[in-house]
Picture (tube, rainbow, N blue to C red):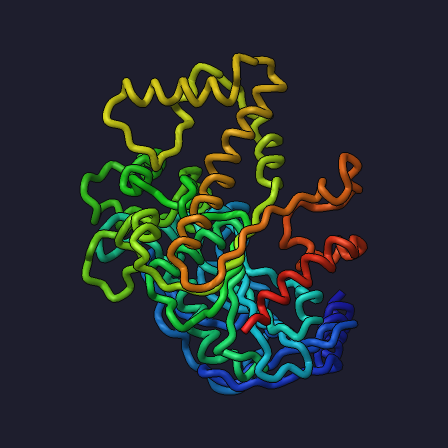
Length: 449
């Protein structure tokens, strides 16, 4: 058995050494990436872009190293399924073999701010266009978005991770063949909402020059916490917390095991931070107010969305028992009412509009899904596009992607409604019509000067 294990290790080492590699100098030290089989690009996985010195706070600069860093580490931040590690602030760089001052695309993953990581799989279609692609991790759930309004947990640690990753790209991407003066950020879902929040913060000015926002908006009720202290307290009480002060609450969270903290069901989201006079403050006003005020960093923006969210919602809602009369409980959290009477009146008006008196189980699923899709996705996306277009000095494009428009009611199996999957998922490569159109649109925008 031992001989077999040794032979296997020797085979793996031989395989690693046999693959073509490339050494690159970064600000922390030399890194070695490897050429991906059957593709003319190099992958550099798991490069540290920052150091997480404290839970719930902004990260510190990355550590330096001697020797050569083997860039072949597939790292995730802690996930609800128990995978991942807290020392997770890394980027993955995919560079075409002969890239020189090439346009750069930085991808921000979805996961509703509760899960997800930077993909380790190379986006071969984008790479074939001569684009350097970067993916990265940021802290999610309570680890990334515990917001207590005190210096130990000011909130938005996950957003400060994103700023640090973009800063690392700005300083180092030229060594990989990318142009630091031509960086496009591409976010999906929570990633798209994050980009909007970063644009509003001013913390990323000069770090990226174009933005693609897919199926997400900072105006969505699922993009901002309006009572983060209550959310944190309720979650802690359910785990046995008995303290009273914010400092006691912080101490409780600091000492929770990773496996416990990532399985909290409460939604930890970005928040409007207290003015703590910290240099890492990201968001000090409501996003809607910022967009209306024109007080934000402007860049060319492509905004896109699809029907995928609504279809997914309908499937998820089938696992929930509905009380059609309880519509008041599903009104958006970012609405403010002068009284409970007005709130109830609004809820009944909205309920009548969407349910229209039809209460069969099948129609309730569809109507509720339509309501949630409008409130969480479609309206916030369109409204933010409208506000940005009215105040942005650069072009703003809005697109709705509908696979049904191409195939009618007979959509082939394995055809996604998510745009990013046609660019990143190799299993959809047979759909040449959709893939080529989206690839042309995206690459034209990324390469736009």
